[in-house]
Length: 368
Image 1 (cartoon, rainbow, N blue to C red):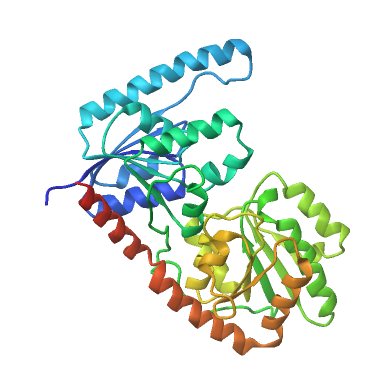
Image 2 (cartoon, rainbow, N blue to C red):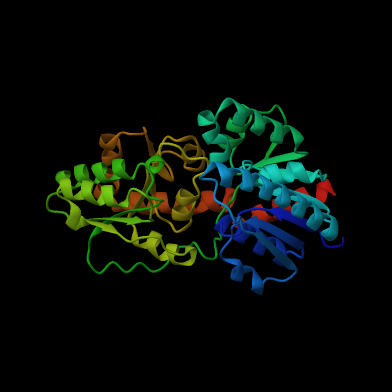
């Protein structure tokens, strides 16, 4: 079969976009990636058969005049996308994220048109205005195919469409995320999380949970590692200070993806207590490294974690329940090993990135 030609509308700077484009390029696809306000274009220069076009808005919509100018600029953007598609002559147009890139995909009027939902574009729709919700319904109605990374997100998307939704997980590279020789010279029990420091992800709940764990283990050396950055960083540090555990809580900041396996291997347990989660990719990364997990019962986390076998699922906004779950791993090192092995098996079966890429390639081939 000849090379599949894909016109992809997506966030250039997203690690998700980068991984899909790189994997599809390695499988022989010819790609045109179109993004808005991208910065990290250098990533794509090393990839074969990949053309990148970035459009940067000149005007911020913060005054009435700039809003008007932005509307005219948007019309120019739509025409540019259509002209690039006409020049490239793709087999498929695939938009990732319904709110912005889905709009571009619909206005391109190209078929077949694939729309992938990512999470906040559908989970956030409950807070959208009526007009925005209708716009989401319209974009989903115009897509020839709709994809989700999880069953939970597909179920949420079905609130806005009756169309069939395919599920192709955004898994992990098991050559990168794997067990390593652990070097914990401090002898500390390490609780860790890798999430943005935003309200939706419950980092404050995790800190309160850790406070309870510290109180229950006064003679045990404990450390909480928080990897990520976000708007709540200052308030979260103040919370740790107010709870008297600041000396045991380490805010590491954001790290590149290729450094995360070392962190997961350092954790004795990875904890994710999100209020909402469309797909538990962080839990999967931890499990792939043989690290047991404690997660909230947010839909996307419940889907990927097998409760009582690869991790423990606890109610959202419940520090006491989360502390009890962490305590089980403190008291029983063998349980950590048992859950770790089971986690690797589960990721290999359902969320191996190479298998997910094969599924996407079959999906594209079937369309053509």
